[in-house]
Image (cartoon, rainbow, N blue to C red; front, side, top):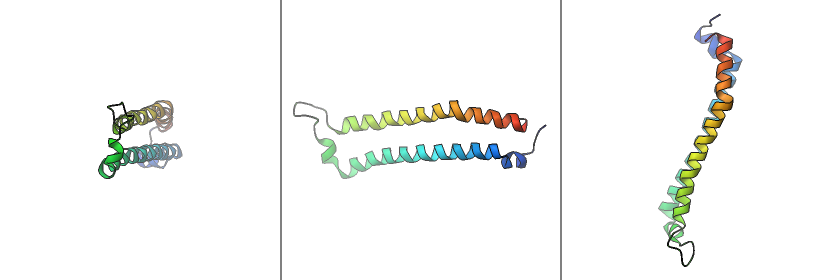
Length: 102
């Protein structure tokens, strides 16, 4: 039996699905923004720190591994979302579709 849009939006499983998606999206977005803008703030306000060499012999500065870390952590956060979506979200979407006839 098919439900209309209002019935779907009022479905408790749909509300739980939307709430979980909003929560994970907000958390990952905030973490990514703090990570990215934290690095940009370091570039803007503490260049001498980023310009320090890792060691006396090294040609690499502290800023390079930090920048690489920002990129890698962005990939990790994307992977966290993909893992969550594949293992939890898709299952919840299927359950809601099965319940509402979609």
